Image 1 (cartoon, helix red, strand yellow):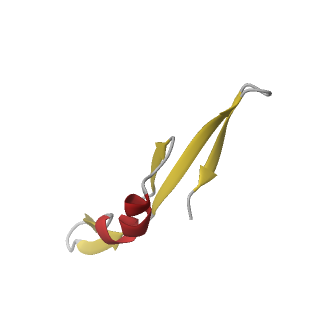
Image 2 (tube, rainbow, N blue to C red; image 1 turned 90 degrees about the vertical axis):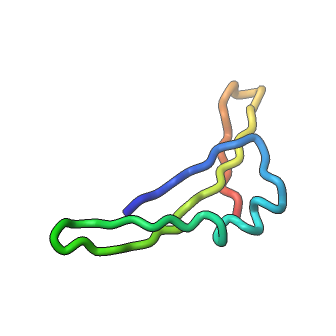
Image 3 (spheres, rainbow, N blue to C red; image 1 turned 60 degrees about the vertical axis):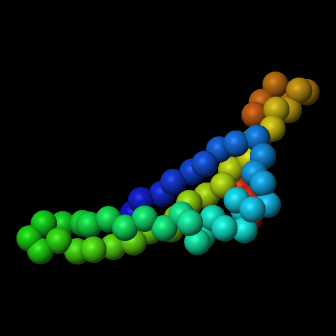
Length: 62
């Protein structure tokens, strides 16, 4: 299974609303016969810097 992650400081509401419509990819698996498949497993991940602990904090956008 293919998984994709897009990591950014912030996402516009338009990107969040349309991620499932525009993030569809077609691929083939196997050989002779090939099997066409589709995936939409794209996660939007926001990050922020915690200045107290000096760490990056990652949070999935729902």
